[in-house]
Length: 532
Image (cartoon, rainbow, N blue to C red; front, side, top):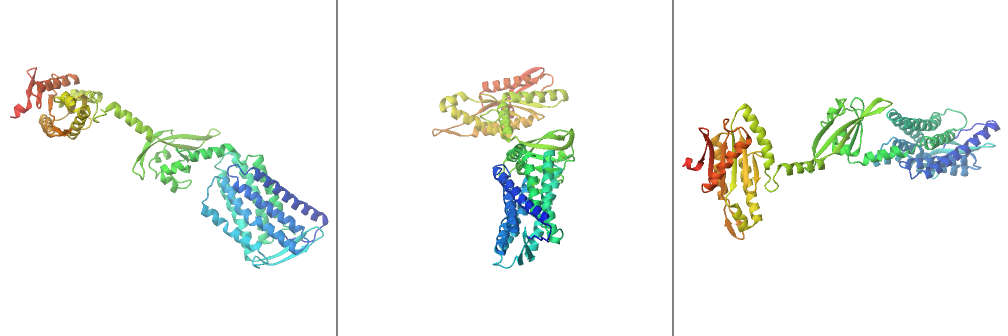
């Protein structure tokens, strides 16, 4: 480090020597504080920074008290154990303080120049590169080195100036987006970085008095940083814990400004909505369809959306919004993304169990009634056609007794599969046991008859095997068609279809009977006999 000292009064010399020792002591005290704070979150760069400043100031003290040139060179080498790393560590400390997580490659690049400078300075005069010449001047109280530095020395000074400026720009940017405690801490840190920067600039341009005030500036910086730690709570547990929880939570967390512009998001939100990782602060979220409506609405709302992942599985999420206020003033909005996939799956399972027959997958009797009654009311009011179909497996008890109930279940599932190809999902239901029922609105009579005949023939041709024995099953079908004069309720249509089914059973089974209204009387006739 360069120290230019002209002859001065003995009093000024004494003061300067005292200030150098004070700066070294202040940096040592801050180093001890950094060591004790090393277990605090985000304290790594702070501790390393305090160590670098202490080594640099210790080298200054040894330099101004060096009796020989050899001792002065050793003092400079001790300075450069810390000096090249003060600026990069200060930069990383501020980035960490602001919550920025730099990539490892960026951190590595930041240290390339300091490591080169450290090597060149520490191995001088063996390499003969970092200094052109170095001469020790001894005053009555102070020694100092007159340095003629190379271009590497200039690069070092410029780099030491650029990094603190960049760090302060980052700090000022975050200054207006954080709370009052952060702003007070930020002011102390900015002041701590500006003072040494003044000393570096004065060295670069060769201005200032006969004494290098950089170590004194660093001592004052140490006091300001110590104030941030002790008085302002630099490592506050609450916000750090809150940040860690937000980053580790599985729910998404997005912060928008009052205009719906993007500010920040946690890892989970970027995983759920990858587009969040491609936009910067202040950009619109209108390109993200799932949450774009938040930028257009000022009301607290809720919404749901689904995302298909790379594995092909669909995930379901619910959005909620909370206003962020400070001193009763709206300063932003927080969007939470909750994963409701499991809840939706359970809800679908409950809904399925409530609406469906678990064996066949068809809707159950209750669901058929709920849907059928609503459709029947619409037909009664507006007019139209409808058909009720009742189906029963012939001699099903004999099948269970002969081949077992498990085989009986296989028969029911096979018939359900056949019926699923002939009816729409909410039309056909397992009514109970071996009985099935279908209610079909707005369908012509000839179409219904064709469906019933085709289904009877297909089921009759099905073959079932049990213990090497092959057997077939047949069905009986009863039909009733909507008649406005007779059918004043859904149950009435069901009753007529049930009567037709009973007639089919008594008529020899494996047949189809129709319940018709003729002269206000119910007539039951075989559809297959009519066909013949």
